[in-house]
Image 1 (cartoon, rainbow, N blue to C red):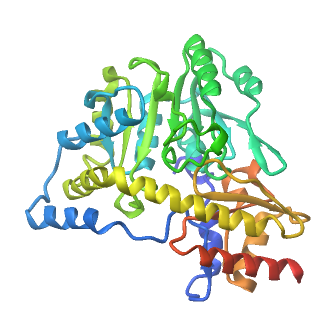
Image 2: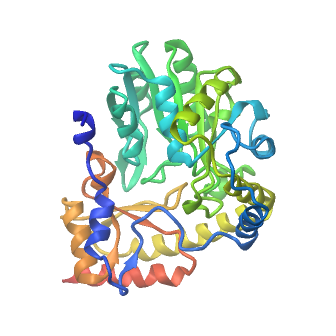
Length: 388
């Protein structure tokens, strides 16, 4: 066993979930997924594909019709993107790992903006890279980027910059001006950008700065096709398809065939019936995604409005993703607190330390709930725990 693998930390979220294993009374908000099932039209498309006998291998890069549909969908939100730039992957996780396999050699320097979902910093470490973390900074519960600090950390020796915005777990979102500054700087240093944009449609700008935007700012809005940029998308979040494991990479056209080789060596291809489900999800997107976005905004506001009056709670209203990131005054061990909440009060939250040391002392609460009243029941349990 390679030492870097032995040194990987087990999921702290799973550790908390295991503490509540088998209990039907737990209100679980620890995992990053909605409790709504995949829409019926998407499920029916997969069933029809299976019944039609589409159970064989497909193309490494995905069904041509799915790549074309993804290109149309992405182009409706950003600058035009051709199907030749798209590689379909077995989940957004796989897309992120393939990006690191394509770009990173042992000993390379990688810079990552944190706190972040732990896979994003573990993946380059698995490849033997040296990962340097640049932390967002909390101000009254809102997490902010020190742009000068980040740009100073990216030098010609930096092979890859990893950024996730909207961010899991903090909800922080890059501005268009920040993205332009980062892209310009990385062009000068020759650094690749791996941008995890899986939450781009789960975006809640204030009315004053919305300007008609239906998604978060993207590097695709400003980049040229051959820029050193890989953008990762997933069907998991805004299409309610977490268990389907379907994602994609948007890359410079000159390297897409090379990405196909890596897909072959990782998973060979995405199951055809899963891709048919993805096609159905894209067809329904003009109606389904705005409806989900509006529902999650209501869930966010319900939760934040209920949490903010609690004594000793620090948090801000996130602009993106589907998480409230909160701190309880005097509680610095987030894992111990999360375990106590689930064991003693039946409330399942993710410990902030699961997202790196920068998240220690914080808790992540996924507000993607079919019933906002369930969120209020969770707040009642937290309030009861804080009174004890």
